[in-house]
Image (cartoon, rainbow, N blue to C red; front, side):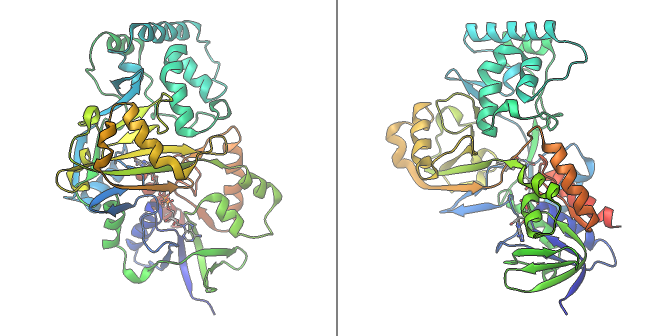
Length: 443
Ligand SMILES: Cc1cc2nc3c(=O)[nH]c(=O)nc-3n(C[C@H](O)[C@H](O)[C@H](O)COP(=O)(O)OP(=O)(O)OC[C@H]3O[C@@H](n4cnc5c(N)ncnc54)[C@H](O)[C@@H]3O)c2cc1C
């Protein structure tokens, strides 16, 4: 008879780790946590390469949820955490302006500022009461006007999502993209930045260990024998309540908490699932993010020296975002060194050649004046890390597809949670809360 657990958790990313943490708090905890990789953390991992530490795409911590903040700061990371004020910028027209672009036009060419302001005024005047935007691109035009849309919002978002913005909805956007008042935009066009906007204007980052320190911190609360690494689930027998492992083992469960990507979960359930559910799973869209990591000898990083990260909207660069790890924590680089991380999104609509990314990024860093050509000899280490899936795409059928799948899984006692389990744009705090919710739902 295969071993039985009241709860089996699939995936030891933040959501699965959080589910285990919250189950541990219960007296009757009886669960197994299965992770396919040889290490925990999922997306929230950090690679060490020749003394440089690189997150799998840089991750910052912030939350509006008091429980999540308390857990992360005071229970998990405790004294290994540093609060800082965001220094982030947008690069357009060869100029760095402070993020968010829409409230910090000061310093841009006058013709661009004029187009941005007149576009916003027109958008405000022509706004029709009670008419919802048709899609994400329409949402941008209505909220920011044609100038800001043209010079930043549309090109940047096309690059980050690697998707047609007309084929996306905007129900994920609440609070993520600051929509300022007209007065704030005018002030930001006439004078240097005075205010910061948006939920991550202050954020936290571990002092040591990169962002993976957060994942690792859960292990203090989860007994070793609950966690099985290199444990890839290759099938699920929903009727028998059994998971089937790559090595042929079977494990029985009372309730399954799955944090693996929803389309994979549906596939693992095999042939007997309704065709509407299968079609819905096949309809889920996502993109891929490649992060190019570059370790450099010497501390100098030219114009981006003091910045945390920069958004690149123009076609000058293949990457849409650049981060400077040493400004998150000096322990991410060896003494006297520096590093850069560059993100590039790929999808069926925007293919890219992974093999040439490093060279393209180095050339583009020279083109935009962050490195000089002669500084290529400073490069100590380079690597590409690929996250697939990375961002889920909120296409027009997203909500309907998710509804069909979740309804079916609930009948099978499967709770699908986390960023890819719910197929929602969840940040780290929300993935942790999702794991907590899974446990509460069982109770
Ligand atoms: C480019 C990028 C940047 C981000 N930046 C930020 C940020 O700055 N701040 C922030 O708060 N959030 C950020 N996030 C979001 C954050 O990474 C996620 O919210 C969080 O890591 C999701 O955790 P999870 O446990 O839900 O999923 P995952 O981390 O994907 O965990 C799922 C786990 O399941 C395992 N698994 C998969 N299949 C199987 C199988 N068959 N058998 C067993 N195990 C399996 C995987 O190996 C993985 O460990 C970012 C995400 C991306 C992609």
